[in-house]
Length: 68
Ligand code: SF4
Image (cartoon, rainbow, N blue to C red; front, side, top):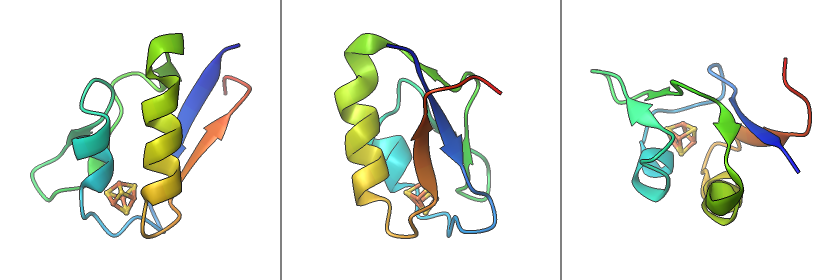
């Protein structure tokens, strides 16, 4: 099942924890805010993506079932 990782840039506080958990998908900009070159989550990265969503201290990450 395809999933897409979304970041709420207003809620994000830029601690960068998500990029530590999921460096395969998330990079940080020069201010420490996450950048997603591709938001589609490959099947083998789904457990880490779910972990990043669960641990985001600002509740700024979510997984969508639809591409937008
Ligand atoms: S873990 Fe959450 S608050 Fe921290 S940089 Fe990632 S999305 Fe933003």
